[in-house]
Length: 454
Image (cartoon, rainbow, N blue to C red; front, side, top):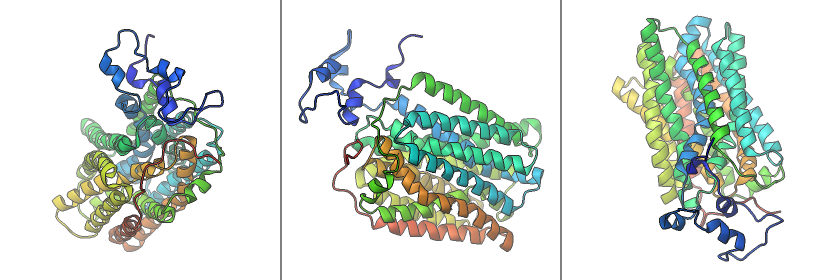
């Protein structure tokens, strides 16, 4: 097949810079070069001197980062956000109540939580890249099931499978994408994860609206799921061919809680993550229904608003990721939660259409940044397989809140015949997350990327 593009390769120097010394390697003081390192640093035949001066640790391989980041599209856009885009048509076709729509979100998040538990307690024995690919396979099966569903039961099963695969994807994609990335640029690199999700969230509603326009039928929804399953298979093939992830240090699978408890401010970080879980699992899930029912949007207009949310998330993910590299993760996390609270509050009012759309854009820019900011916060303290275990431990708290969110939000909507109360609760929880993160202290320095020793 020929030589792989350099941007996708993992060099020996990069592996050495981000993992502890192996048992068969000779330990050397910081700054001392071993013979093996000197050999790895030697310029290849025909290499320009400028290529030699750029060390692997300083050079971020953006092509590889983006390709790995696209796996987040499968878990968070195809497997989760698309429900909000298509659920008005799905509800009309399958006669779904808001309570049942909430159950779909709860099934997705409950299965995601199950996937998190599996990854957390087996992370020490299985390579992160193996989890990533297994997650994509599971989510793809779920998408195919939804795309061929003829009743509510099949839709519930499909959304659950999509959520189950999401656990394997999200707990491993950040550490694979940030392999070899210095702490000073980690926020920008991991911001790419949510930026790619935002790009996909722009495309899904536009493609859906275009397909419906061509067919002259605004009730179409199944072909969108089938197309997403096919694209997920293409991504899986690309990752298998072009990405070579290094082997990681074996660690105790259940050691995530111990490492989490050593992080300063972990209680407030976990509380904010739980509030975010309720908020994010509810906001988009009912957005289309809220826009049509409470704000009198047409079906096409409500669908395309999701594209505006995606556009906001691209800008926000990259901007807030870079901002966190400058002012710290806690301050940036507090900022995005304050913006999310304000955006959710707007949806409880009868504001003009332009203001509603602006609020959705702000919500996309702010809230979509929070997962990568949280992942970067964890990555600042631990890495490799320990990263998956620690983020998984945090998600043990995240999971129940994400399951309760859609069910409670749908129940409130059915009882009040509007979505004002639903979005009021979301705004209050976002404000609580803002307060939690605002009182967290920025670490004095970033810790090196290696698994903590016993």
